[in-house]
Length: 462
Image (tube, rainbow, N blue to C red):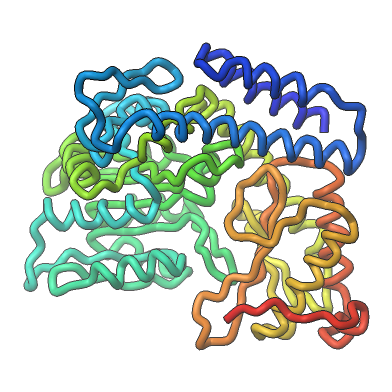
């Protein structure tokens, strides 16, 4: 846990070094962090509390600006972010975020490629505006609709595509093993790791080879890198793709870009173009995306921009350090519970097959019913309390600490997806998580689970 202490100290120093008006509070936070002689579980609770304090200080920066300025601010008054960057605007919905985009955007693209970065209030807002903007720019017709092939399974992306479907916009799902299907559509939407019960991962090398050999290819490739952003080989893919093509990488910047602090919802769009015949250039698409964002208010708010206005957000070294730890810890959890049988029927993670990474682990239950999932959730909750470990029943992934949940994609199907999301920190909490999962998952069946935990009430999932 000494590493976590050093990392938290670095986050504090990063913010304190900006010389903003809250510098004394950062210095006090640093002193409090180091003023402890705790060890073991107690020390890890102290470190978790420190992360919460860091988050609170950053959120207060946004609250302070909200208190001082109207959403439509006084045009005669200067407004500055904590770093000193000016942000003049007439309406909050058209807030300029060029500084944030410059920090979050990927590095220089390979020769011959043009690049721009556009940020939105969320990844789903980014995807929605991306497809809306492409439809606007390409002008499809009923005779020649814009067709999207979706190699993925995230249920909210399903809903978004269905919502946007029309006589001029259609989509279809591509099966995991259908490499040819990823090349025969006009627009390919790709999840490098499919958000499903199997966590199917794309073989990038095989896909690139198929691209080179295929007589037909998509004009536009959209990659949702939310689950794999630090290990997605952008440079390798761009160098390998031939022909005039528009490549758009979209991800949620809430997950692996904010050191597990969840400061603000954020969608990050990196647009790459080469050629331009038949497809928009990166510059053209960037202009339309920013206009759509400002018109609809789909960008970050003032409070969001202030909370994110800290040097470690957007710093590649900080992002890789955090995301790398998250991915490594989830691979560890998968490996250490892979042989568990009983209540658990199967543990799923790309690393178990040597095909990739993922920031969470999927567990299939032998009795895959909503009641079965509710009982497992209740048992894990009870064990976390008994062991005094921070193992939170909650959604999402990429935190500093660890989470679990059951996702119910469609209630009518009566099935769930039990997910464990290890965070970035190693220590007693993570050790306890592995022990809890092995003990509960290794029980013979749900009857044995209920016998071990008398009066266990399933967590309701409907």
